[in-house]
Length: 293
Image (cartoon, rainbow, N blue to C red; front, side, top):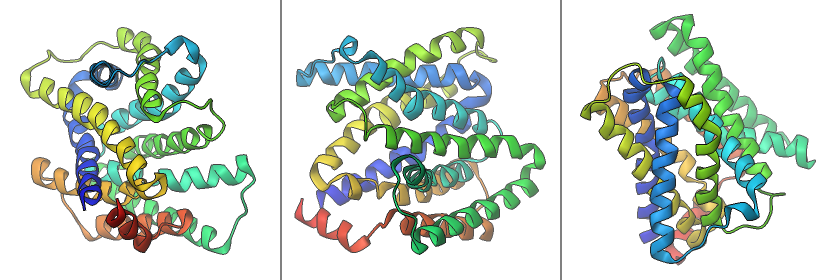
C-alpha cells in the first residue's frame, strides 16, 4: 500500500512539472529555466548524498554522466521547456507519456528485439493518439504549434534513447546515475544559459515554481522513483508513466484553466493504451508487486 501511495505521489510531482514549466518558460526562456532546474536538483541530491553518506565520484565516469545527462535530462528538458512556451500542460504531459513507446521502438532497432503484432498495434494506437492531440492543439493555437509539438515528441524520443543507453552503460548505482546526470546536464546547459538570459525580471511568482520544479519535481522525485524501483521493480515503477498525464491534465485544468475536451480524453486513452501494449504493462502484476512491498 505504501508503494502504491508513493507511485501516486511521484505521478503528481512529475505531472506538476509541466504546470511549472508552463508558468516559467516564457519569462525565463527555456535554457535558463532548465539550467536552474537541474542545478537545484543537483544541489538537492548533493545534500541528500551527504546525509546518506553516498559518495559521487564524477571523474570515475565523466563520459557516462555526460551522455546520461544529455539524453535523460538536458536535451528533453530544454525541448519540453521550449514547447511549454506554446502548448498547454495537459498536451505536454500526454506527449511525454509516449517515451516508453519510443524506448521500445529503439530497442527493436538498437537491440534487435522482435517485432510482434501486439507491438505494432500498440505503436499504431499511440500514433493515432498523438494525431488526435495534434488536431486539437492546431485548432487551439494554430499551426504555429507544429514545431513545439515536434519538440515535445522529440523529448520523449530522447528519453527512449536514455533508457536503451542504460542497458549498455557502466554499472553505477541508480542514485549516482540520478545525481551524476544532473551535474552532467548542468555543465552541458551552462553555455546555452549564459547566452540566453531571462526575458523578464525574476519575481516571486516565477521563482517559486522554478524552485518547486528543481527541488521537488526533479531532485526529490528522483529519490522517490529509485526507491520505488528498489521496492517493486523497474517495470512496475515505470507504470508511473500512465498516471503522469492524469495529473498533468488535472493541474493544468485546476490552476491554469486549461480546457479538457473530448479530444484530450480520447488522445490520452489512445496513447496510454498503445503504451501498455508496446511495453506489456500489466495492472495485475503492478497490484501484486505493490501489495507485496
